[in-house]
Each structure stands twice: as C-alpha cells, then as structure tokens.
Image (cartoon, rainbow, N blue to C red; front, side, top):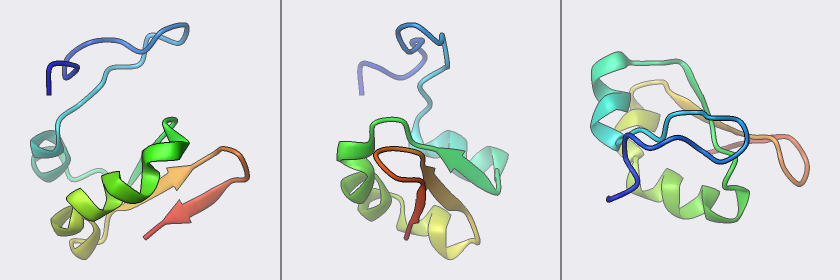
Length: 65
C-alpha cells in the first residue's frame, strides 16, 4: 500500500506492511482503524496462525481473530 512507512495523523505511529508482522513477530498489534479490523485480520491469517493477535481499542476494546 502507498501508506506503508507513513505516520498516523496526530499520534505519529508508523503504518507497517504485513511483511513487517511476519519479520518482527510481535505478539500483539494495535489496530486503530477499527472499521477495517476484520479485513485486516482476514488479510493477515499467517500472522494470526503464528500466534499473533490484533487488539482493536475502539469502539470497545477487543481482540480481532
């Protein structure tokens, strides 16, 4: 995506690619784009199958699996 490597507005958090998830192997990734949490999880099944998880803080905190 053309957004990878950019910083989020306001908080200046880096937008990372799915390849970065597989390379860095974080345990938990926070998804602030809560409306897109389901498609993000669907596109990153390899990360989830490897034990990773997506924390979605809005509108109510939950883990997207």
